[in-house]
Amino acid sequence: MKIVIAHPNAATGERWCHELSQRLPQAQVRSWPTDCSEADYAIAWKPADDFFQRLRIGKTLFCAGAGVDHLLRLPGLPAQLPLVRVEDAGMGIQMVHYCVLEALRVHRRDDDYARQQRERTWHELDYESPAAFTIGVFGIGALGAQVAQALRALGFTVIGYSRSPRELDGVRCYSGDTGLTEFLARSRMLVLLAPHTPDTENFFNQRRLAMLPNGAWLVNAARGALVVEQDLLAALDCGALAGATLDVFHTEPLPTQHPFWTHPRVRVTPHCAAATVIDETAAQIAGKIEQLERGEPVSGLVDRRRGY
Ligand code: GLV
Image 1 (tube, helix red, strand yellow):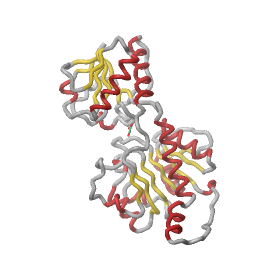
Image 2 (image 1 turned 90 degrees about the horizontal axis):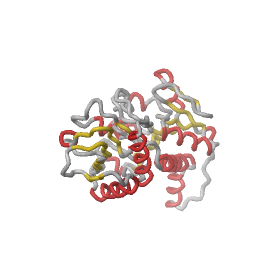
Image 3 (image 1 turned 90 degrees about the vertical axis):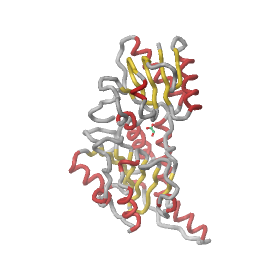
Image 4 (image 1 turned 180 degrees about the vertical axis):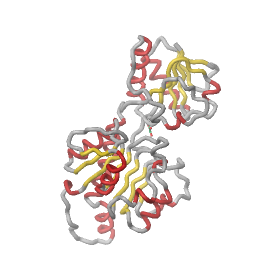
């Protein structure tokens, strides 16, 4: 069995090869680019544009991360090739921590207290019950559902929005156009955790950002493409939004001249909210390869029409 690993970072690619070879000793595991033009399985993260022209993948392509948007956009992706995404594998807990950190910072007015300290001001700000601070989670799939439950366990009122109707314990879930209006109007903090698809691209434009309550906070830990950056800047500049925590951007790395870097209401992190945990993910993928070799179905199969 031949497995090819394609990762833009050569050292990371080598780690993947090592982890996979340990778990599937019978397989020939190679790091891309290799001298082979065929493989049974490939595991890829943002491979070069000519990847599918140069490699024929016989059985299944695995994405080395949760979001498969980069692979679906790549020229020459064979129409019938099954594509499988990572399911949690250590990402959920990272996403929970990232979003909880932001929720607590905003709710406990961390920025205000930091400013007061710089000014040597001793002043206790008003406290609001977390139940009165509603957090909206846009995208309640594998990661979003975990984030919603963790925020709920901290006493926040949590609401969710998904493309198709869903149910989550203790979380009011919305879907559809009418659902969106109420969902956004209630979200004092909006956490984006939906995939980048044709439906979500530039979804958060001027009109939809204006549907949030005045002074809301945006957290984008999904994909930069979900938000129209100029519209977000305008909403921050006029104070309609109190702030934004952004982990993902239209262009990554974020260009050094980009206004987000120095904007007083923006917190920037370098797409680190939830990294692929290589050993856990390799174990998950190796397990799925074994299932496929036995002729069994696997979970995490991407529906190309939905885009995730
Ligand atoms: C990271 O952004 C991922 O999709 O895994």
